[in-house]
Image 1 (cartoon, helix red, strand yellow):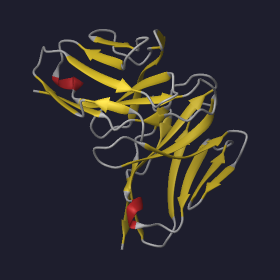
Image 2: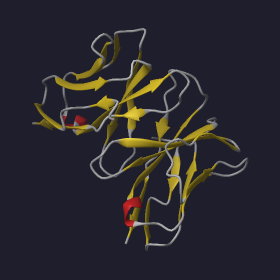
Image 3: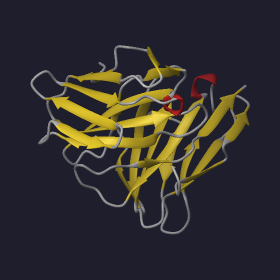
Length: 115
Length: 112
């Protein structure tokens, strides 16, 4: 997990508030992925980004969720008007390139609790 | 629809013995498979991977076997050590998709 930095590690939000999760990829990696793990489930793909581009957002809920990876700075996963069902662990991952057989490396995760 | 399945939620193995974790998949387009290990409150750690052009890949105590006709892969850990106690996830990817599909995980407990 060394290298992919996520913050905050733990975040508590009241229903209706906004949550922002940040991810800095490993050095030299230009591809970022966000995954979500609900309690007692496996990880589910949410979105795949390169610098300034969303490549695949097929796993993102249609409303309230957005992601960006600006030219400068970390990738941000933003959840507006959070609900209890958004409580989960959100994992960011990165890879150096896009190709078949490309291993992605995960960060430590951000645990969101909605109260 | 669960494209990647780990049918055993948990597995208990004695220290020093072999641990065998299993994974089945349904999508024939998957061409790359990975195993990750996860401790509580941490992110998944990459263990080992295999391309669909191979049927076996070995790295130290870890060996992954792929049976394409059965759409089945397994992870062998030998000898098992207490530090191997964790949740193990298998994941699959298809050409260019860059979108891993994970199984539900198997909790491995190594008993002294």
